Length: 236
Image 1 (cartoon, rainbow, N blue to C red):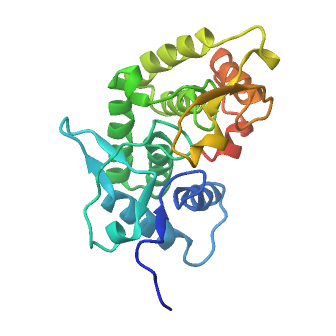
Image 2: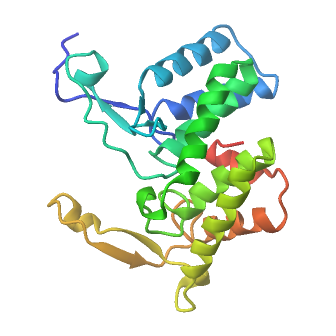
Image 3: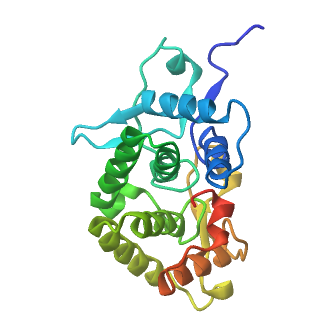
């Protein structure tokens, strides 16, 4: 097979990358569903994710949502550009799944790396998260759901304090004119390919990028119990 170097991307994210299958394999194993090679696949994916983790000058651990093929095979060094702190492509989604996988196969190193990464995200200034929307996929609700899940699992005060901070931010984005109270805020797709990054508000009620995802996340704080809706996002 001929590989055209420069045209391939290794996707590490939860929504479209290798972390998604890792989550599915992990959740199945937690539920007692195991087939040949499953355990080994979890270990191998964890090894690759740890291999492509980065450490900044503050010794904070993070991941890129995408790695170019040249970087993956070692022909080039990554520019280490941090993705936004989102569920879909960012370090929070990746770290949460690494935590779940580490807990499931008793890989303490993976569990510790994930906790340290998420703690570092919690200690960042809000503007470093690079989030604009209250919604789940690429916004504050996705980050809040991950931090809430981590708090339930670890009872860590850092996660407790940060979930309150994110909650305040989401409430500040409430708009009585929006459908069910919250707009989806994202880059205008029409101008994205032109590299004109203009933010636009849109009415969307769906789970992934709409107000339903925001409302369910808020309810998870009012009544912090383990519910199945988070499984749709592969974080529980």
